[in-house]
Image (cartoon, rainbow, N blue to C red; front, top):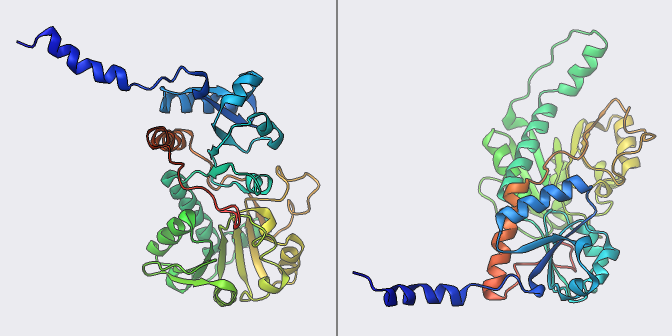
Length: 337
């Protein structure tokens, strides 16, 4: 029979080792510019994923409490709102894109950890496949024919003869490349530095970018927005594409020179563009992009963050930090990702 003494020996270490999450310095703020309803949803998801933490909205903290916080969870926060958190050592973003934080915190010691989520990567890969098929099977052409009540069939190009060039071979790019390759497409990828992928040709550097563009029937842009990628697809680079090529931009609007893109479409250098991202979002009602016959407009829906999976990943990283004191791999502020 187990004695009370032995039971106490079993329980005591658990009580001693349990972290004191009620301390003021364990407050974990969620800082964002999201609408109130979305903030509430994020708060609920994050609290469910890590009930041991005191997760609160940033505006509910006093000035003194803000000064105690060393870590915050953020969703594209208003940069001025970070100033009140004087002791921050790192931020965990619930989004994959962190270009705004990179611009504002470039000279700051605050580390920024972006979201790396396999669910997000799979969602993006599905979007890449869906809209590549849209272009591959001539859907824009058939949509025009329908509007004009015109009946005409066009030859189908085999998938292995359709060359898809992916700009950006991070988590999103690699997942997209793999899924497209599995569907039989001829897939290539480009990145800033050399990467080797199974059964997928990869290019890097300025020379590699030129080579990839010259061979791509469809270009899928999945690059982060950095000083080096701003305006990357300009007039000169768009002119490298084969006549009749198409573009899908799921990255950031500023990577593509809009006027150069319009010119390339209007002179039939390019056949179509699928745009999910823009320099100004929502896209202005006055923008000429809305009604261009060779542009498909999407409202930034290619890969929305999944609250549940993202919260679990944030929770895992924060628990590891609490145990080890080590910040998860952070964004390189010099290159922007």
